[in-house]
Image (cartoon, rainbow, N blue to C red):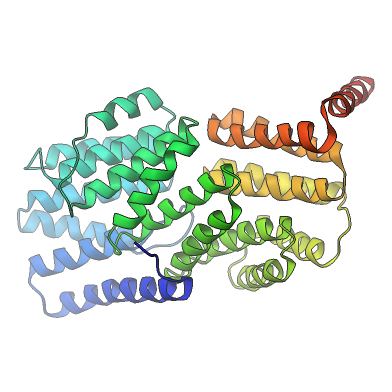
Length: 386
């Protein structure tokens, strides 16, 4: 299925979320308890949640929970609990998310229905973020295939793609993520953003930057439509960094400029220095100093702490690409090795594989094995002599 263009995607996302937002006060004013409950659940499930960004979703869920009790709707209680679980997962409160998934599953009146399937899939996704890959794999295999048109089928494919990425089977993630993105309903904005970002990571790993950039642009368009400005800033920096590393400086400058403008309205100190660095580097082809390297690596660590795999990889590759272009090969190796160490600490084998591939390219294609080994030996000697 052909994806809409970025402007269309931004407008359709904004329109959908705007409609869901308006439904809430309209049904509060003149709707029955069941109509209000349905409107609140539609709004709470459609509006994406991001750690550290204000959202009305928590309030909507509190109100929906009271209405579900008032009308004695067990299915709605389960859906409220499941959405709370996913919100906790998005905020990386993983133990609480897992407990809420279990509560939602227990609340379901139909153990073989769509709600039960969505609970099982959400449990898999939380386990993956806890790095419990064996448990996640067993749980995923136990989920039956959904009938056509059931949203849980697309969510299962998304979970399968996420499993392959975490298990360092990045190429295998391409098919299920592509299927998920084509089948996810438009109102599941949060999951469509996740699928686009995950596919971008897959194509970065496969060294297919044109496709990676297309999926990043789609994710950015949906984030703009959702007015999640902090996330838009991060996507602008990620996209601009990759474009600058490819030498597409005009497009990179436009994105850095937008990020800077948004940073003034929604301050993000950890990103501001990177925006300044990117704009300077894109307008002047000169090697950056130690301060710039340190700024990029601080950002990479920050992305890792947020659980932002794509941000970590793009920032490290951005800095290493600049250093490689300037033939600062020891610095590029040090940057990639630092990214590798961060990925190992976070237990992200997929990111480790990307950084190892770039180190191998530095060794085999740019320097040659002998020069590379001599360079590393000199670096080791210099560290011992300090």
